Length: 102
Image (cartoon, rainbow, N blue to C red; front, top):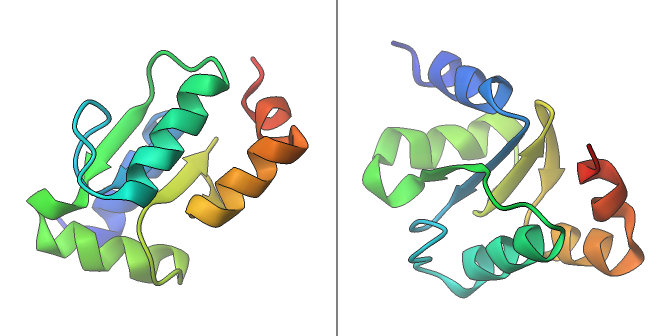
């Protein structure tokens, strides 16, 4: 399967998807860990995650998919939200909580 198609299916397959280094239980970079903490602070008990360290195709493909050079990358309802800095700013302003509200 084409990597971009695979990524699109992942992004649109769950309401919240985090492409990160490591897993929510064992993040392997500080930025990924920070976004996991933010999502949990917003009340999310579960969300989809993709460990980009497990697949080089996904690791590069997600950067191309969003035209965003860094990881982590957060997607909500199929839309790219941003990386760690943007997620942090949105959390601090309350915007992320509103976006994630059921």
